[in-house]
Length: 139
Image 1 (cartoon, rainbow, N blue to C red):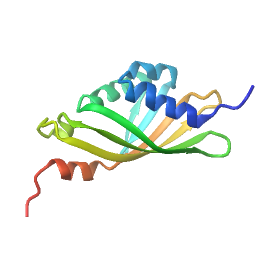
Image 2: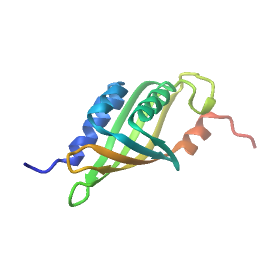
Image 3: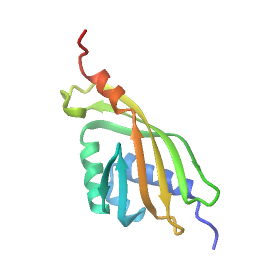
């Protein structure tokens, strides 16, 4: 059996789940007890993760995730990915869903099982910078 290409797994996940707008496709990629740690908050379990994806995507029209760079460690058990999300504001951070173009960057570090299933995702994104662009600044 040839080793799993973890970069291909992660980039396929981005394409089939996020860009296709199909959270249920996560079933093919993540383990049942999958965990995402997003800005320090843990979402546990595949079904909760899929609900989180749906809720996140509901805040962005014309959603598109652009992969900037993805690489893995020597044995494929960890993958790091830099990405950028593009779309239109549909109420991010409770702001007025004004349809303004939005774009923000992020990073994800994935834990990958030997069989290629995704076990854990640690995510950080430029949320503060996006929030500042979407809200009026006081002097």
